[in-house]
Length: 234
Image (cartoon, rainbow, N blue to C red; front, side):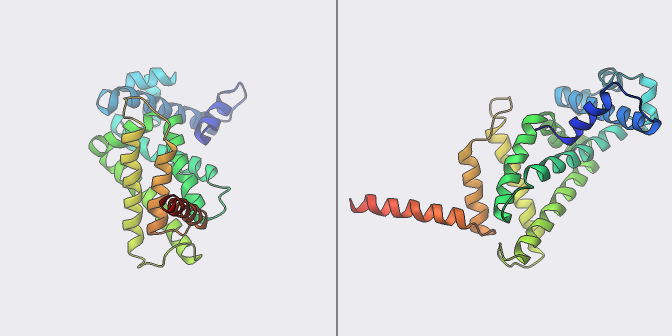
């Protein structure tokens, strides 16, 4: 499944009569997408305006109709991709039957997005140095979305009741887990890998034991315990 950004870019790229506004959207998105690819390949420090405009297929002078400077583009790059990623995850998790199931689907969707847009990994982790404001925007955006999800799960009786001040801390913990899991299991060989199923199981075991309630996981663990008991008495 493609991200909504890619779908819109393809739609706007088809031969058709576009309005002035649609053309502006197309060019701006083309520049952002080109910048993402370039930064993914050479990093923030190596991303030149000339390379980005050439990749986007627009004149270099056109660049300044959409961005004040190279740094302005880099500052907008991560927030743009963050919203694209959230839309991708939301769509993948839309058929969840519980908050715990939504967390599992969202976790898997995050890594699916990295597979579809591998450049996001480098953009995110280099942005802390080269576009710190964009990095903080990303952290705040993801954390706030997580906090809302955590609050709804608690209010619906599907998760533990906690001090509301803990939601931000829990959100940052979950974000940190994704960061290090992606680094260890998806980029260990220098190329994007599929996230192993056992990683997802381990992640859900931790989060459901600490915050969410998951009857399916509890039932599965009870069966595992029964089998272990039977083996010990055999």
